[in-house]
Image (tube, rainbow, N blue to C red):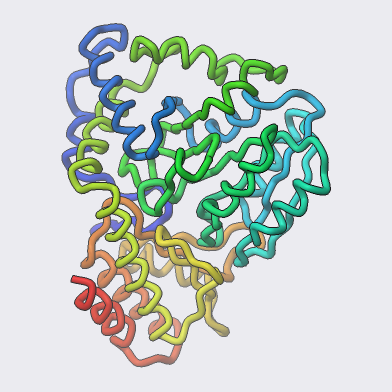
Length: 379
Protein backbone atom coordinates (compact mmCIF):
# COMPACT_ATOMS: atom_id res chain seq x y z
CA UNK A 1 0.00 0.00 0.00
CA UNK A 2 1.34 3.42 -0.96
CA UNK A 3 1.72 5.92 1.83
CA UNK A 4 0.59 9.49 1.18
CA UNK A 5 1.32 12.44 3.47
CA UNK A 6 -1.34 15.09 3.96
CA UNK A 7 0.03 16.37 7.25
CA UNK A 8 1.12 19.99 7.77
CA UNK A 9 4.68 18.77 8.32
CA UNK A 10 6.43 16.73 7.32
CA UNK A 11 5.12 17.18 3.80
CA UNK A 12 6.00 15.21 0.64
CA UNK A 13 9.51 15.69 -0.76
CA UNK A 14 10.06 15.80 -4.57
CA UNK A 15 12.16 13.02 -6.06
CA UNK A 16 14.86 15.35 -7.39
CA UNK A 17 15.27 16.88 -3.93
CA UNK A 18 15.60 13.44 -2.34
CA UNK A 19 18.27 12.53 -4.88
CA UNK A 20 20.34 15.57 -3.89
CA UNK A 21 20.68 14.04 -0.43
CA UNK A 22 22.02 10.83 -1.99
CA UNK A 23 25.05 12.67 -3.41
CA UNK A 24 28.43 11.88 -1.84
CA UNK A 25 29.02 14.00 1.23
CA UNK A 26 31.31 17.01 0.88
CA UNK A 27 33.17 18.93 3.56
CA UNK A 28 31.47 22.06 4.82
CA UNK A 29 34.66 24.16 5.08
CA UNK A 30 35.29 24.13 1.34
CA UNK A 31 34.72 26.59 -1.49
CA UNK A 32 32.42 24.05 -3.16
CA UNK A 33 30.03 23.90 -0.22
CA UNK A 34 30.23 27.61 0.59
CA UNK A 35 29.16 28.40 -2.97
CA UNK A 36 26.09 26.16 -2.60
CA UNK A 37 25.28 27.65 0.81
CA UNK A 38 25.62 31.19 -0.55
CA UNK A 39 23.25 30.43 -3.42
CA UNK A 40 20.80 28.87 -0.97
CA UNK A 41 20.87 32.00 1.18
CA UNK A 42 20.06 34.14 -1.85
CA UNK A 43 17.20 31.79 -2.66
CA UNK A 44 15.88 32.17 0.87
CA UNK A 45 15.88 35.96 0.48
CA UNK A 46 13.70 35.49 -2.60
CA UNK A 47 11.34 33.20 -0.69
CA UNK A 48 11.16 35.51 2.35
CA UNK A 49 10.91 38.58 0.09
CA UNK A 50 13.60 40.38 2.03
CA UNK A 51 16.91 42.13 1.49
CA UNK A 52 17.98 41.24 5.02
CA UNK A 53 19.97 38.13 6.00
CA UNK A 54 18.18 34.81 6.42
CA UNK A 55 19.90 32.39 8.79
CA UNK A 56 19.91 28.62 8.43
CA UNK A 57 19.76 26.71 11.72
CA UNK A 58 20.11 22.97 12.28
CA UNK A 59 16.87 22.59 14.22
CA UNK A 60 13.14 22.27 13.89
CA UNK A 61 11.08 25.45 13.67
CA UNK A 62 10.99 25.57 17.46
CA UNK A 63 14.75 26.17 17.47
CA UNK A 64 14.28 29.31 15.39
CA UNK A 65 11.41 30.38 17.66
CA UNK A 66 13.73 30.07 20.65
CA UNK A 67 16.51 31.91 18.80
CA UNK A 68 14.11 34.78 18.13
CA UNK A 69 13.27 35.09 21.83
CA UNK A 70 16.77 34.64 23.24
CA UNK A 71 18.48 37.00 20.79
CA UNK A 72 16.28 40.10 20.98
CA UNK A 73 15.14 40.27 24.62
CA UNK A 74 16.68 40.67 28.06
CA UNK A 75 15.57 39.30 31.45
CA UNK A 76 12.42 40.93 32.80
CA UNK A 77 11.42 42.63 29.54
CA UNK A 78 7.82 42.40 28.36
CA UNK A 79 6.50 40.64 25.25
CA UNK A 80 2.99 40.43 23.83
CA UNK A 81 2.15 36.87 22.75
CA UNK A 82 -0.91 36.20 20.59
CA UNK A 83 -2.30 32.85 21.73
CA UNK A 84 -4.82 31.24 19.41
CA UNK A 85 -3.49 27.70 19.25
CA UNK A 86 -0.71 25.31 20.16
CA UNK A 87 2.08 27.30 18.53
CA UNK A 88 1.05 30.67 19.87
CA UNK A 89 1.17 28.99 23.27
CA UNK A 90 4.65 27.70 22.46
CA UNK A 91 5.93 31.26 22.10
CA UNK A 92 4.56 31.96 25.58
CA UNK A 93 6.31 28.88 26.98
CA UNK A 94 9.64 29.87 25.42
CA UNK A 95 9.37 33.43 26.69
CA UNK A 96 8.48 32.27 30.20
CA UNK A 97 11.42 29.85 30.28
CA UNK A 98 13.75 32.82 29.66
CA UNK A 99 12.20 35.02 32.34
CA UNK A 100 10.32 37.28 29.93
CA UNK A 101 7.17 38.93 31.30
CA UNK A 102 4.43 37.71 28.97
CA UNK A 103 1.39 39.83 28.18
CA UNK A 104 -0.99 37.25 26.69
CA UNK A 105 -3.62 38.01 24.08
CA UNK A 106 -5.89 34.99 24.28
CA UNK A 107 -7.85 34.15 21.13
CA UNK A 108 -10.44 31.39 20.90
CA UNK A 109 -9.04 28.46 18.94
CA UNK A 110 -10.45 28.71 15.42
CA UNK A 111 -10.82 32.49 15.61
CA UNK A 112 -8.48 35.13 14.17
CA UNK A 113 -6.99 37.89 16.31
CA UNK A 114 -8.34 41.37 15.63
CA UNK A 115 -5.40 43.68 14.81
CA UNK A 116 -7.01 46.56 16.69
CA UNK A 117 -6.69 44.55 19.90
CA UNK A 118 -2.95 44.38 19.34
CA UNK A 119 -2.79 48.15 18.99
CA UNK A 120 -4.94 48.64 22.09
CA UNK A 121 -2.64 46.50 24.23
CA UNK A 122 0.51 48.13 22.90
CA UNK A 123 -0.97 51.54 23.73
CA UNK A 124 -2.06 50.54 27.23
CA UNK A 125 0.91 48.36 28.23
CA UNK A 126 4.14 50.34 28.25
CA UNK A 127 7.55 48.99 27.22
CA UNK A 128 6.47 45.90 25.28
CA UNK A 129 9.62 45.01 23.37
CA UNK A 130 8.26 42.36 21.00
CA UNK A 131 5.03 40.93 19.63
CA UNK A 132 5.03 37.19 18.89
CA UNK A 133 2.40 35.71 16.60
CA UNK A 134 1.74 33.13 13.89
CA UNK A 135 0.94 33.75 10.23
CA UNK A 136 -0.89 30.43 10.05
CA UNK A 137 -1.64 28.76 13.36
CA UNK A 138 -0.85 25.15 12.39
CA UNK A 139 -3.04 23.62 15.08
CA UNK A 140 -6.21 25.38 13.87
CA UNK A 141 -5.55 26.41 10.25
CA UNK A 142 -6.32 30.06 11.08
CA UNK A 143 -4.74 32.85 9.03
CA UNK A 144 -3.58 35.98 10.89
CA UNK A 145 -3.75 39.43 9.31
CA UNK A 146 -0.01 39.99 9.61
CA UNK A 147 0.01 42.84 7.11
CA UNK A 148 -2.30 44.94 9.32
CA UNK A 149 -0.35 44.07 12.47
CA UNK A 150 2.84 45.12 10.68
CA UNK A 151 1.33 48.55 9.99
CA UNK A 152 0.47 48.85 13.66
CA UNK A 153 3.98 47.93 14.79
CA UNK A 154 5.40 50.77 12.70
CA UNK A 155 3.86 53.18 15.22
CA UNK A 156 5.93 51.66 18.04
CA UNK A 157 9.61 52.27 17.37
CA UNK A 158 10.84 50.15 20.29
CA UNK A 159 8.70 47.07 19.53
CA UNK A 160 9.55 44.19 17.20
CA UNK A 161 7.14 41.96 15.28
CA UNK A 162 8.19 38.28 15.27
CA UNK A 163 6.20 35.92 13.04
CA UNK A 164 6.02 32.13 13.13
CA UNK A 165 5.45 31.36 9.43
CA UNK A 166 6.48 27.73 9.76
CA UNK A 167 3.39 26.26 8.07
CA UNK A 168 2.75 29.18 5.74
CA UNK A 169 5.88 30.72 4.19
CA UNK A 170 6.02 29.57 0.58
CA UNK A 171 2.30 28.83 0.53
CA UNK A 172 0.72 32.10 1.65
CA UNK A 173 1.71 35.66 0.85
CA UNK A 174 4.29 36.93 3.35
CA UNK A 175 6.14 40.07 2.30
CA UNK A 176 8.74 40.40 5.02
CA UNK A 177 10.18 43.81 4.20
CA UNK A 178 7.06 45.42 2.75
CA UNK A 179 4.95 44.40 5.75
CA UNK A 180 7.49 45.54 8.38
CA UNK A 181 8.16 42.05 9.78
CA UNK A 182 11.26 42.09 11.96
CA UNK A 183 11.77 38.35 12.27
CA UNK A 184 10.11 35.64 10.19
CA UNK A 185 10.54 31.95 11.00
CA UNK A 186 9.93 28.83 8.95
CA UNK A 187 11.02 25.18 8.79
CA UNK A 188 12.31 22.86 6.10
CA UNK A 189 9.56 20.24 6.36
CA UNK A 190 6.69 22.43 5.20
CA UNK A 191 6.34 24.43 1.97
CA UNK A 192 10.08 24.18 1.33
CA UNK A 193 9.51 20.51 0.46
CA UNK A 194 12.40 19.09 2.50
CA UNK A 195 12.74 16.58 5.33
CA UNK A 196 12.75 17.97 8.88
CA UNK A 197 16.01 19.27 10.26
CA UNK A 198 16.43 22.90 9.18
CA UNK A 199 14.84 26.12 10.35
CA UNK A 200 15.19 29.60 8.89
CA UNK A 201 15.05 33.05 10.43
CA UNK A 202 15.12 36.47 8.75
CA UNK A 203 16.31 39.46 10.77
CA UNK A 204 15.60 43.15 10.12
CA UNK A 205 17.97 46.01 10.89
CA UNK A 206 15.59 47.10 13.63
CA UNK A 207 15.91 43.67 15.21
CA UNK A 208 19.70 43.85 15.05
CA UNK A 209 19.56 46.83 17.35
CA UNK A 210 17.88 44.60 19.94
CA UNK A 211 20.26 41.71 19.29
CA UNK A 212 23.28 43.88 20.05
CA UNK A 213 21.87 44.69 23.51
CA UNK A 214 20.24 41.37 24.44
CA UNK A 215 21.31 39.96 27.80
CA UNK A 216 19.62 36.55 27.64
CA UNK A 217 21.90 33.48 27.64
CA UNK A 218 22.66 31.79 24.32
CA UNK A 219 25.46 29.86 22.70
CA UNK A 220 24.51 27.58 19.82
CA UNK A 221 21.65 29.91 18.82
CA UNK A 222 23.67 33.14 19.10
CA UNK A 223 22.79 35.01 15.89
CA UNK A 224 25.86 37.22 16.17
CA UNK A 225 27.95 34.12 15.46
CA UNK A 226 25.78 33.23 12.49
CA UNK A 227 25.98 36.75 11.08
CA UNK A 228 29.79 36.75 11.26
CA UNK A 229 29.96 33.38 9.49
CA UNK A 230 27.35 34.36 6.91
CA UNK A 231 29.66 37.02 5.55
CA UNK A 232 31.72 34.12 4.13
CA UNK A 233 28.69 31.91 3.29
CA UNK A 234 29.84 29.79 6.23
CA UNK A 235 28.36 28.45 9.45
CA UNK A 236 29.61 28.81 13.04
CA UNK A 237 28.98 25.10 13.66
CA UNK A 238 28.85 21.98 11.46
CA UNK A 239 25.73 22.24 9.29
CA UNK A 240 23.65 19.31 7.94
CA UNK A 241 25.42 19.29 4.57
CA UNK A 242 23.06 16.96 2.71
CA UNK A 243 19.99 18.92 3.78
CA UNK A 244 21.54 22.14 2.53
CA UNK A 245 22.31 20.55 -0.84
CA UNK A 246 18.64 19.58 -0.99
CA UNK A 247 17.63 23.07 0.14
CA UNK A 248 19.46 24.61 -2.82
CA UNK A 249 17.61 22.25 -5.20
CA UNK A 250 14.23 23.01 -3.64
CA UNK A 251 14.80 26.77 -3.75
CA UNK A 252 15.77 26.54 -7.42
CA UNK A 253 12.42 24.85 -8.10
CA UNK A 254 10.55 27.50 -6.10
CA UNK A 255 12.21 30.30 -8.04
CA UNK A 256 11.49 28.56 -11.35
CA UNK A 257 7.78 28.28 -10.56
CA UNK A 258 7.70 31.81 -9.14
CA UNK A 259 6.46 32.79 -5.70
CA UNK A 260 3.26 34.42 -6.98
CA UNK A 261 2.41 31.32 -9.02
CA UNK A 262 3.07 29.14 -5.98
CA UNK A 263 0.75 31.23 -3.82
CA UNK A 264 -1.93 31.03 -6.52
CA UNK A 265 -1.55 27.24 -6.71
CA UNK A 266 -2.00 26.89 -2.97
CA UNK A 267 -5.06 29.12 -3.06
CA UNK A 268 -6.71 26.91 -5.70
CA UNK A 269 -5.94 23.70 -3.80
CA UNK A 270 -7.27 25.22 -0.58
CA UNK A 271 -10.48 26.41 -2.23
CA UNK A 272 -11.06 22.97 -3.72
CA UNK A 273 -10.51 21.28 -0.36
CA UNK A 274 -12.84 23.65 1.46
CA UNK A 275 -15.53 23.25 -1.20
CA UNK A 276 -15.25 19.46 -0.93
CA UNK A 277 -15.62 19.20 2.83
CA UNK A 278 -18.54 21.63 2.82
CA UNK A 279 -20.23 19.52 0.13
CA UNK A 280 -19.95 16.57 2.51
CA UNK A 281 -21.84 18.52 5.16
CA UNK A 282 -18.72 19.11 7.23
CA UNK A 283 -17.79 22.33 9.01
CA UNK A 284 -14.49 24.20 8.92
CA UNK A 285 -12.86 25.09 12.23
CA UNK A 286 -11.17 28.32 11.12
CA UNK A 287 -13.27 31.42 10.64
CA UNK A 288 -10.46 32.75 8.46
CA UNK A 289 -8.78 29.68 6.96
CA UNK A 290 -5.23 29.67 5.66
CA UNK A 291 -4.40 28.24 2.25
CA UNK A 292 -1.75 25.87 3.58
CA UNK A 293 -4.05 23.49 5.46
CA UNK A 294 -7.73 22.92 6.11
CA UNK A 295 -8.96 22.11 9.63
CA UNK A 296 -12.31 20.30 9.65
CA UNK A 297 -14.62 19.56 12.57
CA UNK A 298 -15.34 15.86 13.07
CA UNK A 299 -19.09 15.29 12.55
CA UNK A 300 -21.29 14.22 15.44
CA UNK A 301 -21.31 10.49 16.01
CA UNK A 302 -17.91 9.92 14.43
CA UNK A 303 -14.77 9.12 16.42
CA UNK A 304 -12.13 11.56 15.17
CA UNK A 305 -9.20 9.44 16.36
CA UNK A 306 -10.66 6.38 14.64
CA UNK A 307 -11.21 8.38 11.43
CA UNK A 308 -7.56 9.43 11.05
CA UNK A 309 -6.43 5.92 12.09
CA UNK A 310 -8.64 4.30 9.45
CA UNK A 311 -7.43 6.68 6.75
CA UNK A 312 -3.83 5.79 7.57
CA UNK A 313 -4.21 2.05 8.04
CA UNK A 314 -6.81 1.25 5.38
CA UNK A 315 -5.85 3.73 2.68
CA UNK A 316 -2.30 4.84 3.46
CA UNK A 317 -3.52 8.45 3.68
CA UNK A 318 -2.11 10.37 6.63
CA UNK A 319 -4.19 13.34 7.79
CA UNK A 320 -3.27 15.17 11.00
CA UNK A 321 -5.61 14.99 13.96
CA UNK A 322 -6.37 17.71 16.47
CA UNK A 323 -3.87 18.75 19.13
CA UNK A 324 -4.42 19.33 22.83
CA UNK A 325 -8.02 20.45 23.45
CA UNK A 326 -8.94 19.65 19.83
CA UNK A 327 -7.77 16.02 19.92
CA UNK A 328 -10.46 13.83 18.38
CA UNK A 329 -12.53 16.89 17.49
CA UNK A 330 -10.92 17.95 14.21
CA UNK A 331 -8.76 16.58 11.42
CA UNK A 332 -6.38 18.61 9.30
CA UNK A 333 -5.74 18.18 5.57
CA UNK A 334 -2.50 19.80 4.45
CA UNK A 335 -1.96 21.08 0.92
CA UNK A 336 1.31 22.97 1.18
CA UNK A 337 4.47 22.34 -0.75
CA UNK A 338 4.67 19.44 -3.19
CA UNK A 339 0.95 19.07 -3.95
CA UNK A 340 -1.11 19.29 -7.13
CA UNK A 341 -4.76 19.00 -8.18
CA UNK A 342 -4.95 15.22 -8.26
CA UNK A 343 -3.59 15.02 -4.71
CA UNK A 344 -6.69 16.87 -3.53
CA UNK A 345 -9.04 14.57 -5.45
CA UNK A 346 -7.29 11.56 -3.92
CA UNK A 347 -7.45 12.97 -0.39
CA UNK A 348 -11.15 13.72 -0.64
CA UNK A 349 -11.85 10.29 -2.15
CA UNK A 350 -10.13 8.58 0.78
CA UNK A 351 -11.99 10.80 3.26
CA UNK A 352 -15.33 9.90 1.67
CA UNK A 353 -14.62 6.16 1.88
CA UNK A 354 -13.47 6.33 5.50
CA UNK A 355 -16.45 8.43 6.57
CA UNK A 356 -18.85 6.09 4.79
CA UNK A 357 -17.37 3.05 6.51
CA UNK A 358 -17.76 4.75 9.89
CA UNK A 359 -21.47 5.33 9.26
CA UNK A 360 -21.53 9.01 8.33
CA UNK A 361 -24.42 9.72 5.95
CA UNK A 362 -23.77 11.79 2.82
CA UNK A 363 -23.95 11.55 -0.95
CA UNK A 364 -20.96 9.50 -2.02
CA UNK A 365 -18.90 11.45 -4.55
CA UNK A 366 -20.26 14.85 -3.51
CA UNK A 367 -16.91 16.01 -2.17
CA UNK A 368 -14.96 14.88 -5.20
CA UNK A 369 -17.47 16.58 -7.48
CA UNK A 370 -17.20 19.86 -5.58
CA UNK A 371 -13.40 19.73 -5.58
CA UNK A 372 -13.24 19.01 -9.29
CA UNK A 373 -15.64 21.86 -9.96
CA UNK A 374 -13.21 24.31 -8.35
CA UNK A 375 -10.15 22.77 -9.97
CA UNK A 376 -11.65 22.86 -13.44
CA UNK A 377 -12.81 26.47 -13.13
CA UNK A 378 -9.39 27.55 -11.89
CA UNK A 379 -7.50 25.78 -14.67
